[in-house]
Every structure is written in structure tokens, then in C-alpha cells.
Length: 192
Image (cartoon, rainbow, N blue to C red):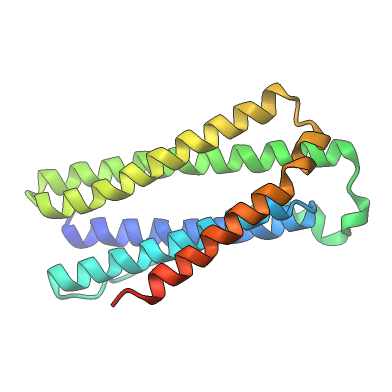
């Protein structure tokens, strides 16, 4: 793999992540889970900022634009939901949808961690140590997010996706992640 291919593959994957988190925002808003929606809005913006950072790094260090960045449309929202309204959601659908959403999130982070580690190894093999170190920051971030995702998933699983537990935490989640959203926006506006 060439340096260009490594950065193209990573940039494409990050944009896929932006789209996945964006769909999870709508997914959770449909389930009336504003806290989860705020969390995925935060992740969507973080991924977008990560994409911009990666692109800027490549442009500044290699003097080129990243070619052939492609986004694969991820279908997070079940097709059947488009013919229903929020009022159609029963407790069984709610539980299975929360479970499914959490499983998608964990699966995505595992795939992302694996891919970033592979791309890191490619850069090391190419002798691009500085770029590999740069990519290692992304590995660190995704490892932390994966840990958070797995912990949260297991917490809900052992509580059998208790509706009251999930609903009770939405306001706290929303408030916490809205504050983080403001920080992300502020931090990225103030950067050159």
C-alpha cells in the first residue's frame, strides 16, 4: 500500500463514520432518546473534525490533496421505520432497537480500531514514522471510544435494556453532550 492509499482509506473510513453517527442521531431521535442523539451528534462533529485534521496533515506533510475519498452509505435506520411514526414504537421495539443501536456502535468502533492499526503498520513498513505516530493518536481515541461503547453496552445488556433506566438518563446525557458539543465547536473555530 502507498502512503496515498493509506490516507485515502483512512479519510474514506472517517467520512463513513461521520455518516454512521449522523444516522444514529436520527435513529435515536426517532426512539425519543435525546441523550443518545446528542452523544452521536457529538461523535459526528468529532469525526468531522478528525477528518479535517487528517486532511490538513496530509496536505501539509505531503503537499497533495487526498484523492478518491469515497463514502459508503451505511444503512443504520431500518427501512421499515420509514413507514411508521414515533407513536408506533412499543416496548419490545424500543428494547430491540436500543440493543441494535448499541451493537452497531460497538461493531463500528472495533472495525475502526482494527483498520487504524493496520494503516499504522503500513506506514511503519513504509518508513513513515512521523505519519504513523500521527495515526496513533486516532488509534488511542478509537480505543477509548471502544472501551466506552463496550462498557455502556454491557451495562444496558445486564439490565435487559430497561426502559425506565434508559429514559431516566436521557436528560443527563443530553446536557452533558450538549456542553461537549459547544466545546468541540469552540475548539475548532479557534484553530487556524
